[in-house]
Structures are given as structure tokens and as C-alpha cells.
Amino acid sequence: MSNLILTDEQDGVLTITLNRFDKKNALNDLMYQQLCQHFNYARVSEHIRCILIQGDKNCFCAGNDLEDFIQADEDSDLAAFKFIKILGDFNKPLIAAVAGAAVGIGTTMLLHCDMVFAATNSKFKLPFTQLGLCPEAASSYLLPLRIGANRAFELMILGDTFSAEQAFTYGLVNKVCAPEDLLANAQQCATRIAKLPKDAVMTGRRLIRQASQTQITQVMNDEADEFFRLVNGKECKDIIAQFFKR
Image (cartoon, rainbow, N blue to C red; front, side, top):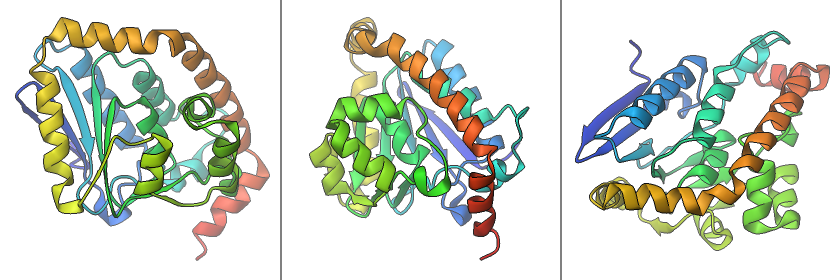
């Protein structure tokens, strides 16, 4: 079993640590498969009341491993999209601790989290257009819902990097803290949630999310269709190929 994803269970919290730091935690197909397994395990395990997903105090997730896109074809069944669907339909509280790079899915997955802690060194980026791709993880719906269509266009189409402070202003993160405090603060919050009455927490979470749930599923399917069309197009293939010539 690969050690690219580490897990720990304590006090009702399943902590998932991305552990591919030599690649800035870029997610490859194997990592997505393991994430699917861990989330499915948490979903059906009565003793797991909350998930915390993290990297370390310097790096969260640099997005998708572009090599997987180079190898993709029209018949590819990318595990990334299986994970996205699990993420969108997950039934328990999900906390994220973000530091350093939060690129692509490293940012869009946060839209499905219930609490997000960001270190002051966090750098968020949605480089879809620059790669010849389109948004994923229902972000084309959830981000405009959160920050408005004009600001979402700016972040998703221009793809400029934005800071933890900006993310806080946009309402994408709950708290900004020093890098050395990040993991402890997120763990403390996750443990606090896990100790609350389970039925009340899950009912409250479901009620908060139910109005948008059907729309999220539909948008994810629409995005996936367009993503596969674009990732198999010449424009995207040429752009990504340039990354491997540098």
C-alpha cells in the first residue's frame, strides 16, 4: 500500500494527510483511489464523526498531477471524478487545514468543506483556463453562489493567485492563522465537532446543504462532460505537454 495518503483515527476524527510533498501533494490517480476508500470508510463507520484533511504547515495540495491528464483519453475513467462525486455527496462534517499551495482541486474541494482553516502562507489558484480546461467539483456553481458571478469569473477565468486573507474576505475560509498553529487549530475544531451530539450535527449539516444538493449533482455531471471533452482536445494536450518540456 502506498504511503502517499496517511490516516489516523482519534476521538471520532479521521485525519487524512496528503503525503506527497516532493510533488507538493499533487494528486495522482492512486491517491484519488485511496481518498475514495477513506471517505467511503468514514461514511459507513459509526465511530467516525468528522474528517480532517490536511497536508502540513507548508503545503496543502498543488492540484491534479498533470501526467494523468496527458495519459487520459476518451475512454479514461479518472478516479478524480469518482472522488469529486463522493465529496459532493459526503454525509459527515469535513474540515480542511490549508497551507502553501492550494491549486485547482486543492481549492475547489474546500467548497465542500464545513470548516476551512488557512495558514497565512496559503496561496490559492484556479488555473483551469490556463490549462485549457474548465471548472470541476461543482465549483462553477458553488463559487459564484459564495462570492458572486463577477468575482468567480475573475478567479476561475483569469486564474490569479489569491491569499489566505483574500480567501477569508471571500468567505472561502473560516479562520486564518500562523502556519505553526494550523494543524493544531484544525484538529481541535474537528475534535470539538466530533464530541457534539451526532444526530443533531448530521441533521443540521443535511438541512444546511439540502437546498443545493440536487443542483450540485447535476453541475458535477455537466462539468465532467465538458472537462473530458477539453482534456482530450488538442489545445489542452499541447498546453500540458509544455510543462514536461521545461
